[in-house]
Image 1 (spheres, protein in one colour):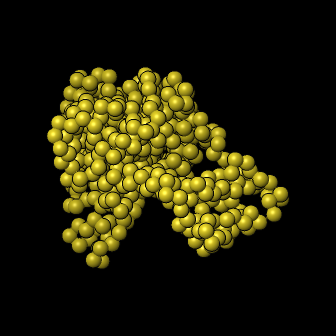
Image 2: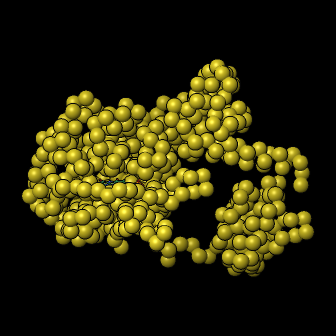
Image 3: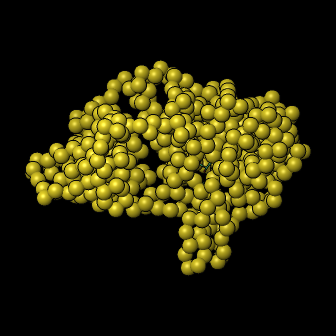
Length: 494
Ligand SMILES: Cc1cc2nc3c(=O)[nH]c(=O)nc-3n(C[C@H](O)[C@H](O)[C@H](O)COP(=O)(O)O)c2cc1C
């Protein structure tokens, strides 16, 4: 293999390894070592799929130091900066990222979803100060909430980051009065931030009472928790979301007791979310937020499912990166349902990066909500949600958020309507290929045995066997396989 080519590939791999080694420390020591930049902030941007944003934060003077780098893992920060400086710079990010949720103005689309990340005055104040446009506060109820310990577990990747996250937690442990005091104070101090009061009742009277209380306290919207999968009280949470008649009844009970816009938060523990969503609309809901968590078991240790609560466990709600495809599916289906036309959609589920958020927005969500990313990395993830969104809009010439909300909706169609007459063959880039043969193994054993591996360690495609499934492209570790520019008619390919 050509030495120069190997050097380039190795450098790119080293760059990724150095970036992924970074722990994103609190009050990072590297930030003190560098004079003009905060390396933690820059590496965080790269890790959160915002390399262009990272590039916009540095220039040629980024290497100057106050003291020697004391990174506990001795990460080669200068090397990361050097590689980053080689990338193209994006300038002039003056774009309007304001949007709305059920007609209520948001300074940006990013809201903390109802959970522990929005439980107390101090937390929410900090989140607002860091740039979050709104919060759906931890669900308020009149129930006596008792929780177990531990109440969280996670599926992890090789670098200890969360793939998926399970919780067996219920609702706010604070009283209605304490929550009302918090909402009132936050609204007085942050009039332009959006406060969504998430509520859950056990009957019509409780739903009505809570709606009146949060309206009096000054909330901007109400979110109806029809979706917590962990409730001790029978017939609450996701049990309501699975019973369309109750969804309509309780939505109406709330609408009868408030003049605020109302969002119904849906459970994914159901086959067709459109059914309860339509019921919510019939009850008067102005918007749908989705998804809440998916019933799950993350693993079993010493005979006990996780998390082990004194030798026993229960099913619990799954969230985080792993649930994004499922959340997008539900949003896509609701966005394309004519009976839900014009309802406001707020997307939730596995959003970590600006790109995840944009995907929900392209399917029709005007706002998005996050929890697990904040549990893992803190409120600071909002920095790259905002910066990344600005760069995306600038590069695509969108002047306002509504220019791209819903643009992908019509590209989601039934499988039977997809083109089955043409093939998109993979194309091997031999300048990049390092001859690892991963594409060959996968195609032989898991594809259509359409790749030969020649004596020079090069994959060669047999178009008479290839069905264009793209498994080879997906397994290639160095992105040396792309798609052919033209689709070929199946009948011409053999
Ligand atoms: C620990 C934890 C507590 C949660 N508590 C609530 C809650 O009180 N009310 C609610 O509507 N959703 C609750 N959720 C669900 C989240 O708001 C969100 O719908 C879900 O986690 C998916 O988003 P994510 O992947 O960004 O976390 C909770 C989630 C977690 C992880």
